[in-house]
Image 1 (tube, rainbow, N blue to C red):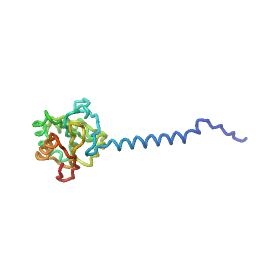
Image 2: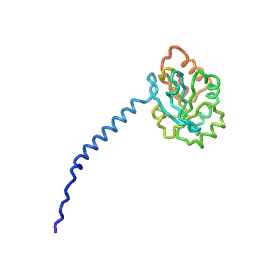
Image 3: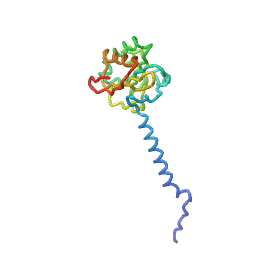
Length: 190
């Protein structure tokens, strides 16, 4: 008794075409994501992250105000060392310059006691899956981006900040002319 071949459903002929369409769509989305990444001298990509209190905060909510975005983690000694300077900066300049601390990969249960211990009062946002960190091309922690009041990323600093660095950031963000500069690691400049 010979086995009878089952007829092939007509829609199966389209599977290679559908797979190709899927790959093309994924490639376009990947390219768009690369194009949207932060770059000094270009508009800062918008993002929305959750605070420790569960509120949603978007960068676009601060349109018209300069913003400093500081990426950090609790396990980073340099991040811990720069927190007093960041807090002092926030207390002095908080009405004029927004400071956002973006914690990478950690849970609220780990971040909350760390923030309380270091008495940080500026907004702490949680980037649990590093979506924003990748968007801003973060290569290590701490890393800081300056966004001017027009939404342009004007500088990037890789490494821990001091009071002097933050005063230079305020000058840069509040000045009329702001030449964008990519900073280098290990005590680079804005």
